[in-house]
Image (cartoon, rainbow, N blue to C red):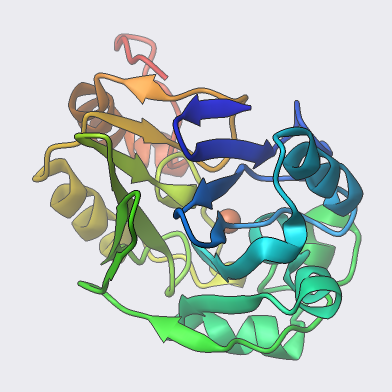
Length: 239
Ligand SMILES: [Fe+2]
């Protein structure tokens, strides 16, 4: 599903498998990149979606993961085996992915499955900027959902798009290393920036406009009743 020129959603419940988080394909002009890549269950449909857009998965050079969870990077080992893609993650979530930790990756915890262990080829860190012909990608380390959660800021066609992963609307669990204190700090931080639009880790294919107001609403509703995204009945938020 095309979201902008050279920016596509290729996985997600409506596009591949109900287990899948959102995954995005970027055409740099010289190579293809993925931001997250879904689960093994959704792998074939993800490949099919990429091909339907006219692209060859063999041209994918790397996967930038938002964090080390099954629904986001569970298929990374398959992409690596079939196409030689490299996987980049924040260091704090790398061990769970390399070891195939079924709890910390949520594979068994939420999906009754196993995480295929995957070598992490490099670490992304806060402030990294990756420049390509068609766009740039900047890394914001936003721990809270997991210790190694990151957001990517995609600057493309004059727009700043926040690729939020599970930093917005993700689940909270001590089993996966969630930290309410860190998460609040991360939300405060991203609310201090301007974004024209954003995408989140679990949604239908949609580019959410009015991102600054949505982020403020998300921040205001965080951790009500200790369910991070519980909605107060008295409040109105736009999801
Ligand atoms: Fe997650």
